[in-house]
Length: 322
Image (cartoon, rainbow, N blue to C red; front, side):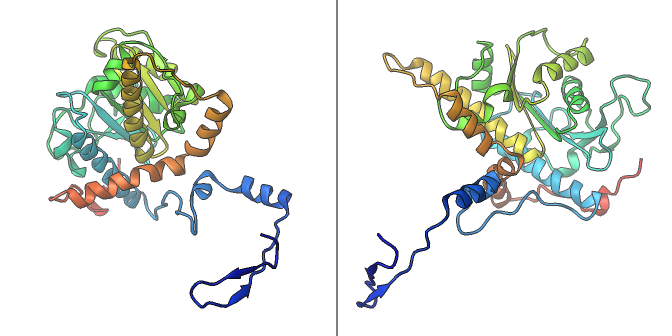
């Protein structure tokens, strides 16, 4: 319709003159390119960014609340496998320390006070090596294999504040192939290019050579990796927030499921997304802010569905002095 055209107004009957402003195409393109991916996906208003916090204790409380909700989410989706599986969260005040779940507690029973504070120090030369420094309401040990993997990733990747690893059904099926995922749908493009790594040197349970194996896994993840397929083992994801790492872990598990199911399709043509489109999808969807928000519906659901308070500590409890 041309500018200044007459359009009908069904509510009031008469014709009204409606003016249209023709945007300068170059200006519009500049404005569009200046939008963040989170702004680009919002219509009418924009979701806020990742929250900031006035104190380290407030930051700890917020982060541990989201970490605990993520464990409840994992329990609801059947990601448990005995004592296996762990999530780590870098401490906001002491960056060489991180929080992790204690050994042998069901994900669905974890509370914020159960999490254990550990050092990423790789050897006994550090006084914090091998010790639980805070938390641990249940007085349980940490998972040594989990500590080795998570500590190595936290040491190597300063941009990573959270690491997720578990032995999930489809993750293990796909890990048995030792292959990368193909870009066959829009969502898996979050793992386009070097955002997804494969660790193929399976050396058994990470125990005797725990530190060395953890370092090898961290190296294989690379500087830009967001997810990893550990051959004959499981899946691993990382993020700037525990929300990002947690959403990516669920997405990686579902993406493995899609490709396992796709492999069962007989006679159908498989369409793979081209590199140009896959890179665009990755760039627009895989930012820390956007991936933080991807987990918020699940966080809100866990808060609403939890009949007991899984956050059982206060800011005062989290004023840590080492």
